[in-house]
Each structure stands twice: as C-alpha cells, then as structure tokens.
Image (cartoon, rainbow, N blue to C red; front, side, top):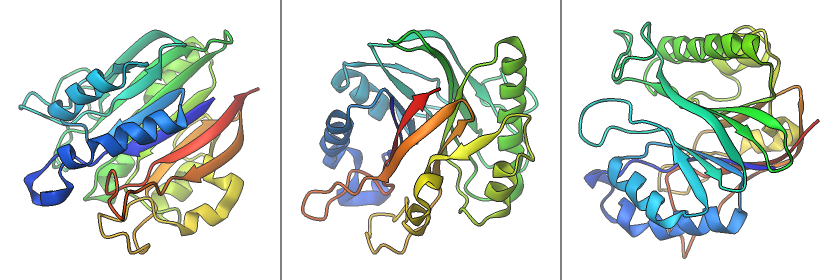
Length: 258
C-alpha cells in the first residue's frame, strides 16, 4: 500500500500568487501521479474540499470541519475506492471529543483527528488516523497527541488492528514531543516513523513555506504500528518552474501489512 500525508496549505489572501486556485492543479497532479491508497490532508478549507471532491473521483473523502464557522479547516482522509471504508469519524482533541468546535483553553483553535477503519482490496483491515497538531504551544501539541492515543488505545481494546497515524505534528524529530512519542510514552502501542527507514530524510524539510530555500523544518510524519513493514519513504519535491503545490512537501511511504 502507498500512503501520503500532505498539508495543502489553507487558502488565504496572504499568499497572493500562491493561493489555492493557482496551485490546485499541481496538487491534483501529485495525487494522480503517485496513486496512493490513502492520503491524509491538512488545512483543507471548504472551497478546497469541494474542489478535491470534484477532481479526485477515484477517492472517497471523509472528515468533518473542526468548527462551525464558515470554511473551518478539515483533516480529510482520501481513500481509494478500491478499498472499503467500514467506519469513520472526526473527533476533537478536547475533554468533549464529540462536540464540534470544542478545545482546551490553551489551544488557539479547535484541533481534530479524522479516523477510519478500512478493509483493503486484499481483505486486510487497518485503522488510520490523520491530524494536525497545534502550531503555537508544545503543551497543546502534547495534549492533542495524548488524546489521540487515548482514542487509539480504546479502539484497539475493541478490535486490535494495524495502525497508521499521520499528519502535521508541528514539531521536529529532535523535539521532546516526537522523542517521547517514539519511545512509547503516550500509548500501549509501539509506533515507528516511516522516515526511520532512511534517517537522512530527517535532514530534509517538509515545510519550507513557499520560499524553497531548503532551510525549512521537518514536521510532517507517518507513523505505523509494529504489524506494518515499511518498504520505503520519500519526500516529494514536485514543482513547475519553481512553483510548488503547497508550502509543505508531501511525504509518501510504501508499506506491507504483515
């Protein structure tokens, strides 16, 4: 299976020439070119969501917006129609995870995760999570990740499945958060970052704004549970004459379910 995480950069007037309408065709090209089984996207506004639904017809797209305000962002899962979605939901990283727009007081905006149980065309079942952790405070990122892991642990007690957890974690590989998570501090489950198959990838940025100086930060991840073998991983640098589809680079991995 091929998995991608891709922060699409929300559509905002601040980006001028890099607004969504000027780069969405490149996003579609990347998704078409790499033919992923599952794609996790972040920072998807309503207009972007509607465009993806019209253009990416080979995928089912699931995930709710994080708030009730117009064009609140989504963390969608795009799942190839050759697989079967058995269940899915969006939950909030708060004390009331089923309440739309809920958050902890030290989170500037609501944060969410979208999850799905998927039965692959080969008949195997996996559980997938996609999130976008807070960009301001380490405390909020840690809280959000712990909430995700609490949900994972509860779901695994009902039915133990291989797990994929991906998204924009807004923290670097040498941060306390990522080190703690990889050491198993937040969960009963054991997770490996797909980048570990080639640790040189950690030296490459996954968010470079739109400057493309190669001096950005590495903050996007795909983690897999021990039932999944990582075959390879790659950061995609696709562009057209120096114009890029997002201020983030997509991260992809090929995996095998053991």
